[in-house]
Length: 122
Image (tube, rainbow, N blue to C red; front, side):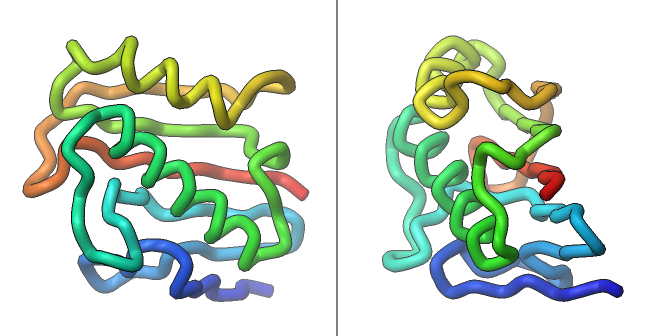
């Protein structure tokens, strides 16, 4: 059975889609932008942008009864691949061991410098 996940603790979608979907023991988290849900603003540095996007993922997971330790797959979309090392340093604050697989893609995003999505298995 499919359960729609919606929380005001994470950035609201900028389009017609859910923040997350839970099906059985799997949680799919839609691409999270680096938008602070309290202010609606994007922080200036890649470090803070990464932190906000990952915190948004954490909140969507929590709304589904999951946690970051349950994440098995991450996709990150970066508009500036030169930011990778700085992004990765913050990423390591959130994922220290039992690491999920990850793909990082350089791309063009409209109005945001990065986006991160996740899949978790409970």
